[in-house]
Every structure is written in C-alpha cells, then in structure tokens.
Image 1: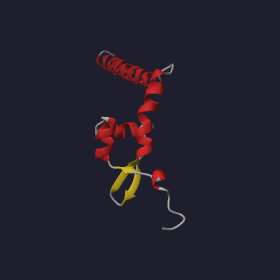
Image 2 (image 1 turned 60 degrees about the vertical axis):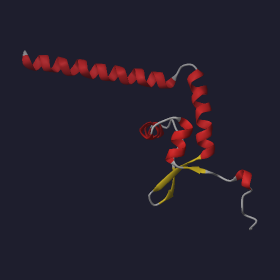
Image 3 (image 1 turned 120 degrees about the vertical axis):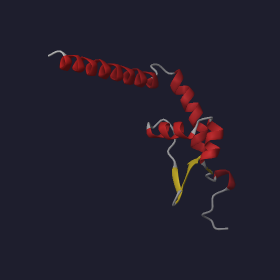
Image 4 (image 1 turned 90 degrees about the vertical axis):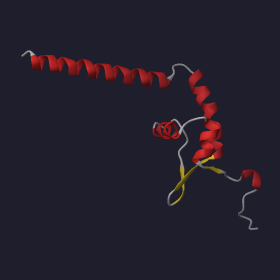
Length: 104
C-alpha cells in the first residue's frame, strides 16, 4: 500500500443511476432535469459510456432541499410562477394575433 492511498473512511463512493434513484425516490428524467437546473448534484464521468454520482453529495441533497424549501421566499415556487406567467402571456398574445389576422 502506498502512502498516497486514502483511508477507508475517506474513500469516495460512486453511485450509479439505480442506486441514486433508490436513495432519492426520483425517476431518471427528474434527476437529469434537476441536474440541468442546478438543483441536483452533477454526475461524474467514470468511463466512456458510464456516469455516476458522488455518494456524499447525493446524501446531502435531501437536507439542502428541505432547508431551501423552508427558507423565504421559495425560489423554486417563484420560478414556476414566472414560467406559468410566461406561458399564459404567450397564449394570450398568440390568440390576440390570430384575432387581428382574422379581423383586420
């Protein structure tokens, strides 16, 4: 054993997708969506066609999620409210444009 080896207690464990799903209760799609929104730990490339997540980061994620949800204001709720507003604004604008095209 070399002097550069880490002690067993400090070893980094990599979790594969089925393990992450089991620990978080999330489906694959939601994990990737939250990761893209910077709301979930980033995956690590561990091979040519393989990725994994660092166990410690996945274990910390629920605690961070609870703390974020209990803080004021809730940034996730604000984001969804803004998205809903944009969707309803676009729907209103597109219907107004159709009306103006039908009745010049």
